[in-house]
Image (tube, rainbow, N blue to C red; front, side, top):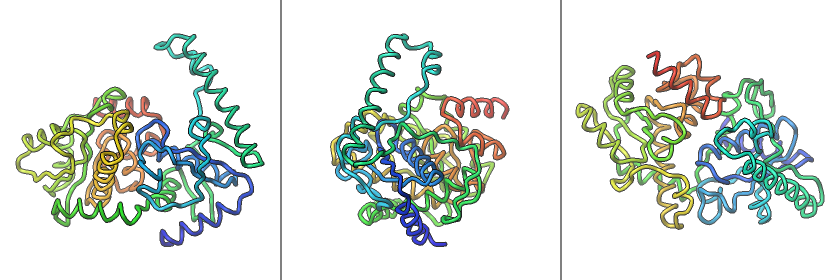
Length: 347
């Protein structure tokens, strides 16, 4: 089945459901975390026969139209502004909050009560505006560790199988973004065969230990004889490092010399022109990595995890065994960080 046929089938199936969910994307996390949450919400809706609708007017990766700034729409989009404040992600349980040793209990209680108030208010507003009960983000209870059976979309397998199918439906750049990405890629003059990898810096260091550039160089040399390497990185100093460490390899990147590490909170506050430029380079880099003969990346970084999931089983994780990847791919980032650290320690 072609991706266009699959998208058409999804629209028909989705619109046939009587119940409705409005999913708010682009709230407060990095792009691929937000994208993955959306895929999970879509799978949840398909399983429970709920029509999935999207709210992205305030998406932190957009600058004018939200999702449609970069992508082709795949479902009905709504624009009621109450979703901005009252449609938020599912919160940790009271038990989980009480186990947090880093934050004062009174602060956590106030935060939970405030968020609960928002959730209740959101449900009431949704009912009043849509004249029927409508599910919101916080009501999603997604479990990736199960078998997914949605025959209308040829989904009959585990989480990675279902994830790949839904990326075929959703990952479609609009004409303007696709053209911009092609121009950026053409300027690099990459050869037909090249390796792709991501080396992350920036705010990711606060979440998990990062792999040094040397690790990627060793892994690439072990995996393939190809010596043209495209690097997705947010810190030009890392790009300079790999050039110095491996002068026998030809290195390419779209990272600009003034970039010293991506910080999501700074990106989301960027003005329209800067955000548009950064998203074009970011999405172009992803498209280039999709075309690589070999790709390697860490399970702890959003773009790499997305690409590893999308192309599984034909993957080369940098910090996880091939056998452990299906389970590791479903874990939250602290646990993925522990899996990665243990793998590096043993290798």
